[in-house]
Amino acid sequence: DAGVIQSPRHEVTEMGQEVTLRCKPISGHDYLFWYRQTMMRGLELLIYFNNNVPIDDSGMPEDRFSAKMPNASFSTLKIQPSEPRDSAVYFCASSWRQGLSDTQYFGPGTRLTVL
Amino acid sequence: QKEVEQDPGPLSVPEGAIVSLNCTYSNSAFQYFMWYRQYSRKGPELLMYTYSSGNKEDGRFTAQVDKSSKYISLFIRDSQPSDSATYLCAMKSGSEKLVFGKGTKLTVNP
Figure (spheres, rainbow over the protein chains, first blue to last red):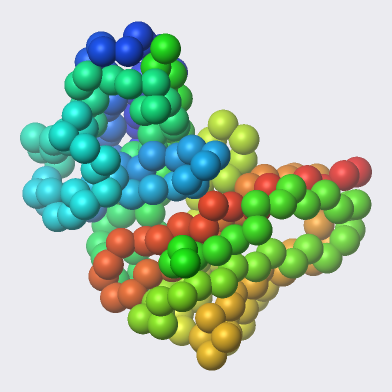
């Protein structure tokens, strides 16, 4: 298996532009997580899905952020409009169950810079 | 008080040293404790997993959980330059989401 796939790997955009990050989870995994990592705040969970349904979006910072999972093999995280404080590394992770053994497998991340 | 506290380091040790990494937490409901390793410009990967209290050993790595003190540790014996990475503790209760520490950056010098 190729692991979790994220695109793009790097994104540089200007303030006010729309940014779309993409994730393909590991086949067969039914949980998908979006995280944001910064030096100041560490790794923060933004939202997670189970069987394509959003379960907890309490970590989404504000209405400028939205996430979708139209099918089991694809998810997007959208920021509109983007702001410099959104600059961070965004990780997608997937797992096949919650509970006793739910190893989350992380993708390589998207490094976002908003100028 | 943050739910999970972890000293960010950085920590620099010579090759062969024993490394001790630690986290404290405030939520007594946490039952599942993990250590993730993150190499530079990569995503975190699970290194060790422990349920409730006690020790778990895997090769050169030992994870310890002391729930009475709300304290977890990761020990690395005979550290190698390839162990140089950021180590993040993570924990959760039941099926709730993982809460991560900020990570400790470790450098093992040859």
